[in-house]
Image 1 (cartoon, helix red, strand yellow):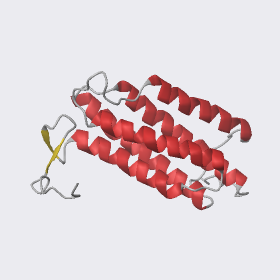
Image 2 (cartoon, one colour; image 1 turned 90 degrees about the vertical axis):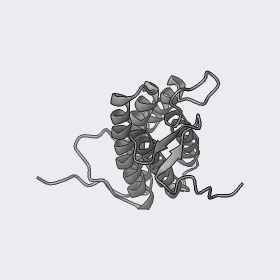
Image 3 (cartoon, one colour; image 1 turned 60 degrees about the horizontal axis):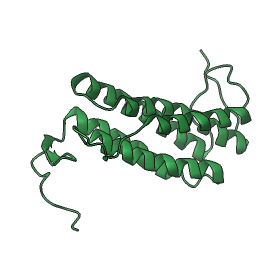
Image 4 (cartoon, helix red, strand yellow; image 1 turned 135 degrees about the vertical axis):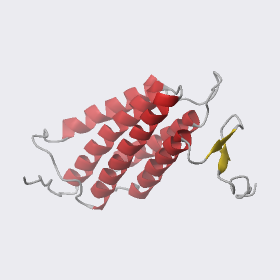
Length: 177
């Protein structure tokens, strides 16, 4: 398979159902931002922590499903879609991470060690992906669970940033006002 097709040279791309759409459409913007989150998570791995790395690998697979979900305006029942079980898995991981962390009592500045800072960056881009998905949702029907997944994922990325920073012995910093 060739990597280039020249089909996008005029600003159009194919959706999963092979319909053509502008590369500037809210649908493409939504799944393009999800792709960016996925790429940033790929930059985090390996963190040096097997549990975190395994979760991040699974999240990257989930994000491919979110992209397929957003790229398909009319999914069939056997097409890949994000389901409530995916979001519930994130909640289970959040709960497990929070058991290891000191409770959060104030806002913190994003940053820390290399892995922690990269996770904070991925979290911020995940929030953008969620906002773009909401814009899409206002114009076209999409899977609501994919939006919930992105919301929960940003929460998980936040606590994972805190976790790897804590494990690395990097203290959290609070903003000053």
